[in-house]
Image 1 (cartoon, rainbow, N blue to C red):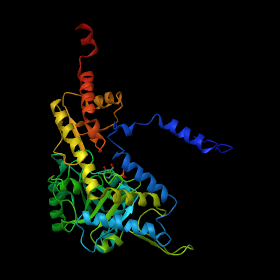
Image 2: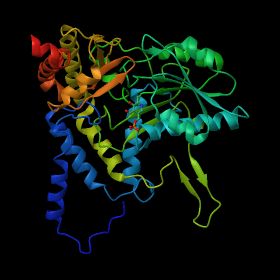
Image 3: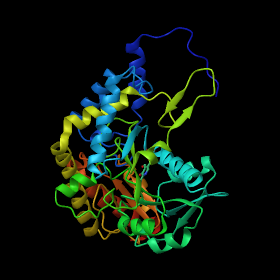
Image 4: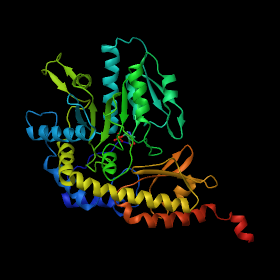
Length: 408
Ligand SMILES: Cc1ncc(COP(=O)(O)O)c(C=O)c1O
C-alpha cells in the first residue's frame, strides 16, 4: 500500500514513543514467555549487544582497510569458531548476516567446487535429510540445484537413504547439529564416512548448535562429534545470533581449507568501479553486528557461555521431566536447547493456541504434531510456570466437550 512520507519530521521523543506503542502488541519475550525467534540470555548480555552495536553501527565490514577494527574483530570471532570446531590450520571462515546466508554461501562454494574442480556438467543436486532447514531449499532455488530430501530414521538423518540418493551430480550432503524440528544432532560421523568413501562434500548445519554444543560438552554432556574432527566435514554453518547470544544479523561459515573458502568469494573486475572482492553475498556488512558479536564473546568467555548454557540445560531437563509427567513423549533424546514433545490423544496445535492465551509464544513441529520449544537461559526462571500453564491448557483442550460438560 502506498503511503506518503510525513511532510514534516517529528521530534525523536515523539517517534520513540510511537515505536514503544507499536511494540505493545509484540510478544513479551523479556518475561521469558517466548521460546522461538529470540534468544534471551539476560539483561547483562542485552546491554553488551546494544552498546557494542551502537558503537560500530555506522561502520562497514565491506571496507576492512578503512576499518581495521572490524577486520580484527571479525578475524578473532572467526578464530574462536575455528578453535571450537577443531579446524585444521588451513581452515578459514567469515561472518555472514545469518544462518540462511551462511548456508547459501556454503552451497555456492560446493556448487562451484562441483563445476570448477570436479567438472560436473548438467543438473546438480543436494541430498538432505527431511529435517534439514529450508534455507537449503532457498539456496538451491536460487542456484537451480535439485533438492533431494531423504526419510528420517528415529527423527535423525539416515546415512543409508542419503547414500542411495547421492550420485555423481551431488554437490553436497547435509547433516544438522541439531536439526530444528526435533533439536537432535544427526549422526554426523556416519555421514562423514559416507562423504569420505564417495568423495562428497559434507556440510554440517550447526546454525543452532554450534555455539552451545561445545560448552554443554564441557559440562559433561556426551555430544557426538559433529565438526572438523570428522574428516568428511568440509563446511560448517554456526549462528552467532542464536546460541552465541550475539545481536541479530550475525552468523559464521567455515571451510576445511582456504581453497574451499575461496570458492565462496565473488571477485568482479569488469565494471567502471574498480575491482570488487566480497567474501559473501552482501556488499555492505553491518559493523554493529560484527562488533556486538565480538563484544558478547569477550564478555562471556568460555566460563560465561558455560554458565548461560547450563541454565538452558536445566530448563530443558525440568521441562522434559514435567511434560513426561503430563503424559507427553519427548521426541528423541535432545541434548541442547530445543525440545519437541507430543501426546497422541491431544491436538498439540490446539494446545499451542491455548497457551497463547496465557502469553506463551512457542513453536510447533508437524511430523508428528508436537509442541516445540527453543529454550534460552531465561527459561530456567519460568519452566515451572510453563508446566503449570501447559497442565491448564491440557485440561482445557482435552477436557469434556461442550455437550458433555452441559449434561454432566
Ligand atoms: C538448523 C537451522 N539452520 C538454519 C537456520 C536459518 O537461520 P537464519 O534464520 O539465521 O537465517 C535456522 C533457523 O532457525 C535453523 O534452525
